[in-house]
Image (cartoon, rainbow, N blue to C red; front, side, top):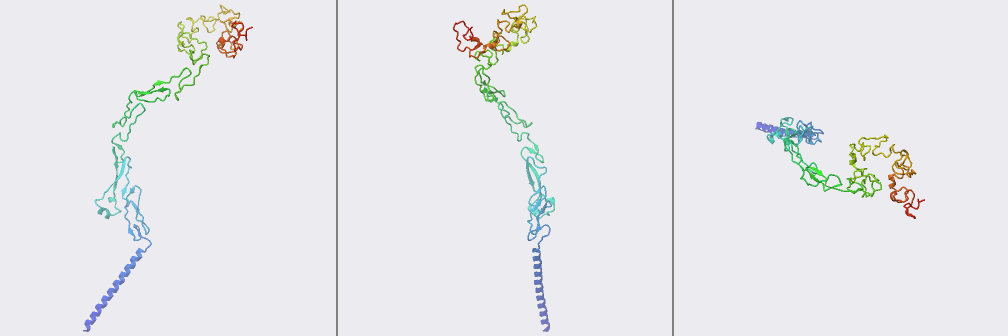
Length: 379
């Protein structure tokens, strides 16, 4: 009986001892976990208040530590959530960088060793249409991206030749409207690919059309100022006060380009003929004054050709009598033969050619004795 009681006592004590030790070990374990969680730092590669393990590949750096976010910061030329996707190199020129997944299944991806780059994805260039090559920089169609436009207003837009990448240049239809940039031409049209002027603006003898504005200058009745109105002037833009026209072609000698021919038919061109209007084929010039004998009024054989009593060599009008040698404008040419006398030397408003007192003002042209010499100068 005493043996059984002792046995029961020992068993009961052992049970109580084991319960006590179990509670003590649980308390110690809890205390250790609390200390780890409350620690101010996590080991490298762990982040957050619970020190969660980072998941970056070897191409990235984890934002770890107790205050870290666990975000992977990728090295140059890598991207992706865990920095396992490389950039396309060389860079895609005519295409897009596309990721090629190396993983067989998601479980393998989620359970692989992050430091092992055998699970890294790849990137390749996916080329746009008509391009090839690693960088999509090799054209497969030379007309890709080529836009053919009309080269000018007299050509139409052409088409691209895929073999050469060049555009054709077809001309516009003849008669198509265009503008040659000259305001003095009207109704310009394309002819065989060239803009051709249409109807020109015609100005009178006062001047020529301004190509910038298409306007004619203000009319001037005597544009060359030679005293001859434009409407009757045989050289309207070149002074020709005597209206000399030796070839009688209606174009005055002063502006007649045909005067460079041989008007007198002596075989000597006018430009070098010492008598351009009188035949002098031998170009004889006895007095060596530059004027051939055939047309030289001053010849030693007749010292006073106009018989005005003044020797030819001293006469300011050698072929026109001017005995007083009057020369009111002092130009060395006597009044009797001075073509400028067709102007108004005395300033009375009457041209010399019709003035009854050309050298004395007589605006009323009074001539009491009707002798043709005005009262102002009639002695």
